[in-house]
Structure formats: structure tokens, C-alpha cells
Image (cartoon, rainbow, N blue to C red):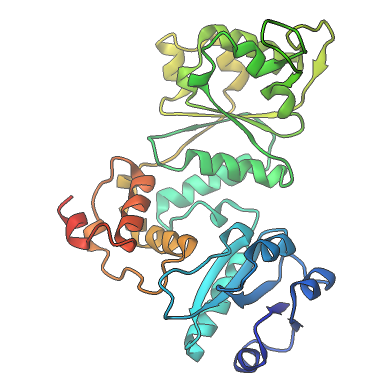
Length: 350
């Protein structure tokens, strides 16, 4: 089904002949909320629709969206938080609309898979997505290893969202777990547990119950903290500071870092018993230099997500070089270009 959301009569009349018969017209957001529109349906709306937050809430689950924009606008407001958005100008051609519907139809078929977020058609990225999708269908610990900017956090969120779409992933940088408050951060504390504990606090372990605990930069996790976490991973039980009452937390552990787990053990930065507790699935996120053929696709995704569709980049040549910051650095350069701070010549002379 295709839901036409607040498009107006004239625009609807131009679109309907190319869609088919399975259509529902939603002149208002409330019509969308009250109608039987599933997450597998395509939403067609306006990119400049005034109340974006209400649309996002109404759409709920990830959707495939076609959004029309005014070519005079220099910045489009995307609905990327609600799904995958394909943008079209108001002066669209028949071929553009057919292609947009084809893209939207393809995207709605892959929601809940790694392909939805992990971009790239190269062989190495297809293999990486296959491993991520296998990990998504288990509840086993996962370690994501790769250089900065390769998408480790995005992969963790993708794995988490498949099994826990309504729960927040609890993330912590392991470098933060080095202070005297580490026990409180991990396990929480009761009121008065120590000087300055003026109120009760839930720790990361409790917050991650029935969800995912994501420990980033695992190579920075001290041996002492590893020992403290080991007991929780083995039994699921822990105690808050200031309390003798055992508590239980059932969570999935995802770790990430720039070093393979076996290398951390070899260099004595990881305990053997902790390693055997978390060493189940290790996924290497490739550096951008290993799949530079995906750069045009990545640039297009960045433009879609940030609304840079009025003048999309067509000359990818300046971007076809190695980025030390990988995809994160590539996206930075794309944004700098579209904001007029950097030219293609600047990028070419990188």
C-alpha cells in the first residue's frame, strides 16, 4: 500500500496514475495514525511539511518514504529518523517517480536487515553485512573491530535494533571507566552509599536489562574492571554500592575497538577468562580504502540524510582517495562542500 500524506489535490492527481490501485489518501497526520498503514507501506509526503516531529511520531516504525521538495530551497528537511527517504523535486518526471517508487519498494523489503544502514555494494561490504545479519539473529556477544570512522557504532545499533527495537542501547566509552566512581557507573548506588551519594542511581548494568550494553573502545578497559564485569556476565547478578541485595540483569553485550580480542590477550591487555566470556562473534569493519568503489553510494546516502538534494555532487573524482577518518571523514567533507566552506578543488588537493 502507498499512503499519500498531506500532499494536496493537485500533487495527488499527478502521482496517482503511476502508483496503481493500492492507495490510501491521508489529508492529515491524524488520518495516517488512525488508518491501517503498516511499516511495510510506502509513505509519500512533502519534505517541507511544517510539523516534522508529528510526522515522525505518526510513522512510528521505520518506513520507506518518498518526499517532494521545492527546488528553490537550499536545504531540505529529511525524515531520515523515520526510515529511508527518497527525495524528488516538485517538477519530477514520470521516469524519476517510477525510479523513486522502485527504490522505496526495495528499501521497505530490507528493513530489519544490515543493508538498511550499512551502505556499500562492494564485495567486502556485502560479506560484512552478511556477518552482521547473522549476528542480528542471535543473542551472543559481538566484538566489532576496525579503524575510527568505519561504522562500528552504526553496526552495533543495527544489531541491537533487530532484537530490541523499542529499547535504548546503553553505550559507554571504556576510557570513562577508570575513575573512583567506576563501581557506581557500572552497578549503581543507594542513597548515602558514599559521601556525595545524595540520591539513588541506576548503573549501566541495570539500565541495560532486557537490552544491549555496548562497550566502546574495549582496549581501554582495565583488567580490574574486566574482573568486575566477569561475574555479571557469568551469573547475571550484581549488587549496587551500599546494598547487600543481589539484583539481576539480562543483557546482550556488544564491544568495539580498534584491536582484535586475541591481540588484546596476547599483549596482556585482556584477561583470558574475560576473553573466553565475550569471544563469540568478531566482525571486522573494513576501512574505506578497502572499498573505495562505494564512495559514490556513500556520498548519495549522506546527501539524502542531510537534505543536500538541490545540487547533488555529480563529480566524485575529488573524493576518490583514502580517508584516514574513513566514512566519518568522507561525510565531513561532503557536508563542508554543501555548506560552502570547502570546494571540490580543496578536496582534490587533500
